[in-house]
Amino acid sequence: MVYTIFFIALFMGLFLENKKNLSYLGFILFLLFIIIGFRDSSVGTDTLSYIVDFKHYAKFSLPEMWNYAWKWKEPMYVIISWIPSIFSTSYTGFLLVWALFPVVSLYVTLKRELENPKDYVIALIAFFILGFFAFYVTGIRQTASLSLILLGYQYLKRIRKDRIKDILLNRNLLLFLLLLSTAYLIHNSSIIFLIALPFLFVKVGWWYLILVVGLFSIDKMVGMEQLTVLSALIFEDRFSTYGTTYESSQNLSAFIMQLILFLICFVNKNKLMLQDCDNIFLINLVFLGLVFQSMSEMMAEMARISFFFGMFYLILLPRVFKLIPKPISNLSYFTFVIVGIIYLFCLSSSNLPVYKFA
Image (cartoon, rainbow, N blue to C red; front, side):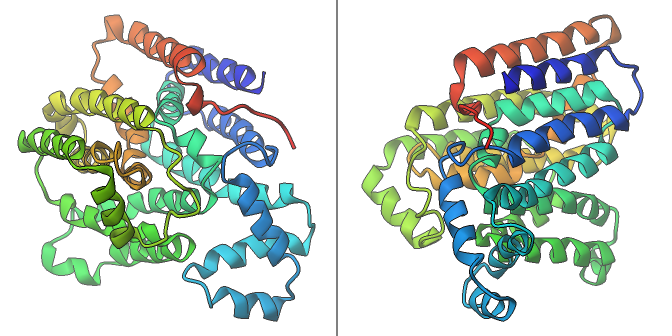
């Protein structure tokens, strides 16, 4: 029922005026905040383990918490998780605090990068069909890190316009690195996003597709034992609490979904570059997401890493829809939304986890 109400409200955005409507965006994201923040401990495979952490941290005084936090590799997770215990020991308060990260990040980013309610609808349908919602109610730490990096995009895209020799002293770079450092102190895997920096200046080419096909083929040929060893060497115990719950078929379907969306963006790359020169960087980012997703069928951790880059479809995909000629643009919006909702409710139950309020 909760999903039905949300998607009806989201669908109504297709009928609103074709201009920026922050009231509608705020309303939709407030509903999302309620869904994420007021969920039961049974919603999301990792939620209960995070609640156990919160109950543990809630017993600390401020000095005890501070000393304990800096013994961890990810001290900001401990500090932020402890804060709700000042007001209440209810785990709902804990979940609400962490729900602020994705909701605020989405509001700021969609407000800045998109133009009207139809754009918001496309972005949020993509948010669900690409598995971000299902992940956001599971991986609290990485969700917060993703959110901070998404906020940092506004600074990254400005760096592209600066001269190379000025970059190291660039205010935008420093602000981005500040957000990335905070993300790192919540979830260390955030450091992987540094590989995106060279792609600020890389042109999109056909070699992208050759690389993805090659990596996907290697992923199929290499055995599970070798990949498990490689995963342990690269990630240590970073994802050990998650286990390998991603099923092979689920990762394959996510790869196919990303590949289809990337191809749509890729074949329209010239038009997208004319529309906004920053779109070339967005194409590069989602390409990196596809690269990691292509290796995820056998190494499940790669699916998690892919999220750091795949989230930029939320900006890029609505811009692709703006390239569609007006006579059929409305039909295209409606078709995408309806097909997306059918996919979520009928074909991809994992992207809409069984929901219950706390």
